Image (cartoon, rainbow over all chains, first blue to last red; front, top):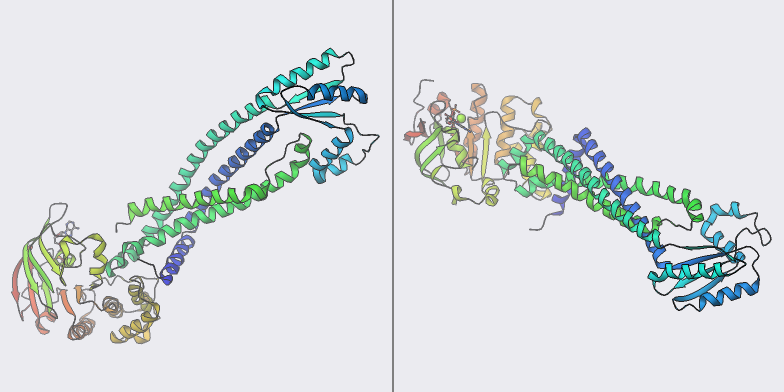
Amino acid sequence: MVMRFSTILRHFREGAKNIIRNGWMSFASISSIVISLFILGVFLLLALNVNNLANQIESQVQVKVYLQLGVEQSKIEELHNAIANMPEVRSVQFISKADGLELLRVSLGEDGKELLEGFDETTNPLPDSFTVEVIEPQTISFVANKIKAINEADATVPITNVKYGQGTVETLFKFTTAVRNIGLIIVAGLALTAMFLISNTIKVTILARRREIAIMKLVGATNHFIRWPFFIEGALIGIIGSSITAAILLVLYQQLVQMTQFELGLMMIKLVTIQDAGWMISGILFAIGTLIGIWGSTISVRKYLKV
Amino acid sequence: MIEMQDIWKTYANGTHALRGVSVLIEKNEFVYLVGPSGAGKSTFMKLIYREEVPSKGQISVNGFNIGKLKPRKIPFVRRNIGVIFQDFRLLPKLTAYENVAFAMEVIETPRRLIRKRTMEVLELVGLKGKHASLPAQLSGGEQQRVGIARAIVNNPAVIIADEPTGNLDPETSWDIMNLLEEINFRGTTIVMATHNRDIVNKLRKRVIAIEDGIIARDEARGEYGYEI
Ligand SMILES: Nc1ncnc2c1ncn2[C@@H]1O[C@H](COP(=O)(O)OP(=O)(O)OP(=O)(O)O)[C@@H](O)[C@H]1O
Ligand SMILES: [Mg+2]
């Protein structure tokens, strides 16, 4: 059966009216939705970033080789060839100190400008380096050790540091799983609480409108017609709650991204941007909030609306 | 219009409210239901508008077998029955107009029909000038007129009135009876439970007397027949 447009409007009007009439209960329900969805959102963003970070590190499969200051050109070429000749290595790229400074400028963005201002060709504190890409990620520690061996065999010890992210990746993936599991448990508990509060709010509405409902039944309103405003009330509570949460969360996250861009940039880490995550996070919060709302009202409608 | 065959009604607590009632009420009849308190009059009426279901027996209203009705269909049968109560049962926050229009709104009547029909019915019950009043601003008789307007606004085939004059003074009661007679005259079947001896004896109609859950008397132009 197709619902008349004016009927749909009426249900929304009644649902909204119920929320206003039930001010404090609605407020409590909305707050509980906001709290649980906010925590859910925080966990989502955390998981998203950790995942992103792990992927970044893993996809790099790079070994960074930092050189002493003032290593001779011929030595650099020698090292370059030795590394490039390893069968596990896909490519070797030499990054001069000037290139390194430029890369750092780009990744630190606005905040970095000030810090890097004083540095030019002569005062550049960065060392020359190689970026080595391996063919198979599993061989990365083997290659790193081989490079270290070359260094130790060389009397001038031209290399200061050999770095790669393998161990970090594994730790990060473990961390993601832990975050996800803990998050799920907390969020499920909070969602249940929110759902319970909503169902209680709807119960109060139903009891407050007993007379009206009795007359509706008496004059022949269908069960659907009687139930709809209560579903809408629950859904609206969920929608209002999730909208508030999404707004707060995204504004705070945007601040966090801006505030930490510099410090994280130094560590070559980049947070997931709001452009990439915003819609997805809002969508998830919205869907879950609405679902909790409808679920809560369904429970009370089933229990207290004997139609 | 209304037919009961060997109707029994036993409430969950074991009270036998009706014990084998059979009756036939034709279209356009006006029937008084009389009998002592607790005899089963309200139960009889609740079975008609499907507020209660019989424990045993068959009941049909307007061609529908009420006892076997699928829950989904109940609302549509109720749209053919108007119910009036002793305590009016108006919604206190709605005006007279809104109380009547409410009954049309909730069965999804198109908007443009509601206004016209509601005003028409308010005029019929003599409340045209009071459509904007809240129940608390109306006298008992006026409130009952709103109740009657609400009961007839959807053009039901039957009106069930459970002691409609029970809370009213004699003069107001007669106004209400005149109104009900007018409605009956326009083609609506009316079943009315009452303890009002004066009305039953003066405005002569069919009288069904229920005593202790059975029909004790059924007379075409009967009398009240009880002392109180
Ligand atoms: N919901 C119920 N549960 C249990 N018993 C009930 C219920 N409703 C009515 N009864 C009992 O059934 C019997 C008939 O009640 P009913 O209300 O039909 O009487 P009545 O004739 O309308 O009385 P009155 O003239 O006082 O209105 C009474 O004994 C009453 O106590
Ligand atoms: Mg009664």
